Amino acid sequence: MLHGNGVDIIKIDHLKYFLDKIEDPFITKTYTSKELDLILKRPNPVNSLATRYAGKEAVFKCFGIHGNTILLNEIEILENEYGQPTVYLHGKAKNIANQLHINSIYLSLSYDTDYAIAYAVAEKEFSSKNIDAFQI
Image (cartoon, rainbow, N blue to C red; front, side):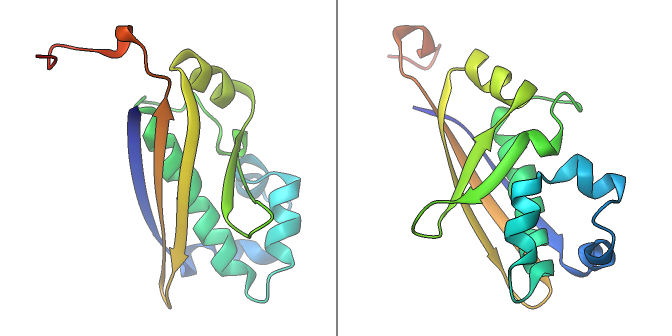
């Protein structure tokens, strides 16, 4: 059952500055060490930096919550054996997903010359408690 979806777009140039500043607080609060290892191995790492940032924002929007209760480095975007983006949740992000009964998050990442975009969908377990006023 669908819990929520999210989309985010970012201008790639906004993150170019940080490629040489991996120890910057923005980077350490946004990306995990596994993500940075993967990003820095890319032929054009700024595209990967930007798509993952957009992905984290899109995943956050799936939760349907407000504020800064989740740190972006608690949303980790790696790849499965086929190269598809795979979301791993840690800390508060994982706790909130469990409270909301979210059991799957699907993520699509893409970029073009100037922009990176991400689209995420969160599924939750179906139960009769999920049925609301729109039920016939």
